[in-house]
Length: 238
Image 1 (tube, one colour):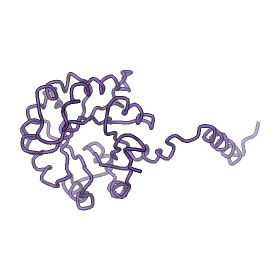
Image 2: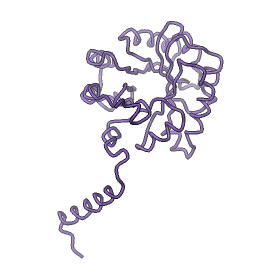
Image 3: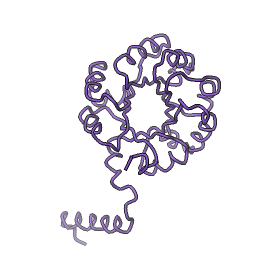
Image 4: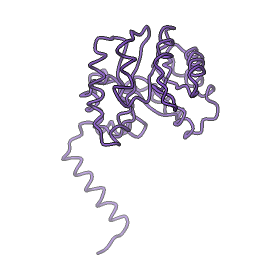
């Protein structure tokens, strides 16, 4: 069964553990990969380019997103062109704004005109991408990564945002929406309802996919058994 039919959405693995990424490359549940400088740093990556190139020697077909890290828009574009040259399956992650709140639509359009596939990252609102999606017909594939988990952390429902974005891109075949920063497996359903075609899951959440649609009565029994066994092993008394 194709993974899109089972889960009704493409699943990308998000992380920077090279051994896990290579392992997931052999897993047909995983359709692609994303990473970022923060994940790389937490995984102890010291040489950005060497890390990316070593992955691309193993991952030759599934799409993989590598992010620019300059805050200067001109340098951002130069980095993007270089990163795109590392492999045909590379998507270059460009933040929708830089740390000075300057919108990056101009360089995204310029890069798309060069045929570079782009993952527009750190999207938190429709307003951030309105200029990009309403007045721009991309020449390359564009993924809009909406940071749904972080949006939900603020108490705002990310589904409403992704649905609004979808209304503006539904006639643009080269643009798709990705549900990013997932927190739980239930996000799969939210992402589908929110009209996303891709969701990113970290290693911990991928391991929980085995629980997908698990019988709740059985899960209840297993949970009680776990508590009982731990109490016995700890030799608790009342």
